[in-house]
Amino acid sequence: MQSTLKSAAKFTGVGLHSGEPVRMVVKPASADYGIWFRRVDVTSGDALIPARWDAVVPSRLCTLIANPSGVTVSTIEHVMAALAGCGIHNALIEIDGPEVPILDGSSVPFVEAFLARGIREQAEPVRAIRILEPVEVREGEAVARLEPADDFEIDFSIEFAEAAIGRQEKSLNMANGAFVRELCDSRTFCRQADVDAMRANGLALGGTFENAVVFEGDRILSPGGLRHADEPVRHKMLDALGDLSLAGGPIIGRYTGIRAGHALTNRLLRTLFARRDAFRLVDCGLMAGCKLPGVGVHRSDVPALR
Image (cartoon, rainbow, N blue to C red; front, side, top):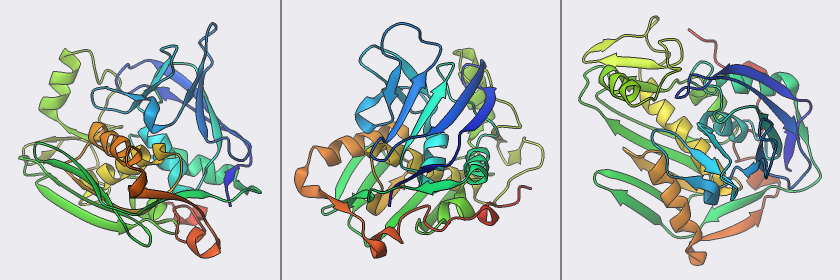
């Protein structure tokens, strides 16, 4: 069945790119509400923005959504991944600025808060998106693909010239809390050269060694090193789950990402929904529901941070 939070979860921090302080509250919502953002600092016009694939607008380095009035919220991927990974289908996210707080650069602060508040089952069934035919988009060497599968699976591979990252690949069946156990604590990452370029262009103003893993050649510059030997590819999988959750329901199928990013995954969803033969909406029964992310998650599943 669908679910929401038992009570509101509050967060404070700074935006990764803006560097501006921000407060955010994730509130329970009724069945079939979906996930919406509301900009509480917007006092005129429409302040509500749907967390949906067709509200995504082009943006550098993050996922940005906008409503027809031009009101935006950016860097939503980590909180969206946490909601999807905890099996939360309905929520209203109130935020007093244009960017979600980066916190520690992963989804684990969101996950911990959601599981601490508790998750309440609702009276309506989950409507999932079952992939019927392969759908693929490409851009240069980057590939994003959805194809039929009995569960929701993510396969991802990355390759960087930096020796400290190199080539990494990972496959994971996302059923029954795998996101919380395996991915939620993996932080965003970048190269020192990327940091310098972003800051020269007015981005990453809120980035620190505490909320991102920074690499330079064969060195890890962030104190404490990695939480996982393959933390970068795990974070890419985290991002992919957050971006795929904008489909409006859980996906039953296999997602493959090869050097894919936010924009390519959104292009994949747009291509999918343009092809009515490639998917079917299904009400999840007990057996199908048991295969979805978030089913049976417990606070003890949250990994202890290094």
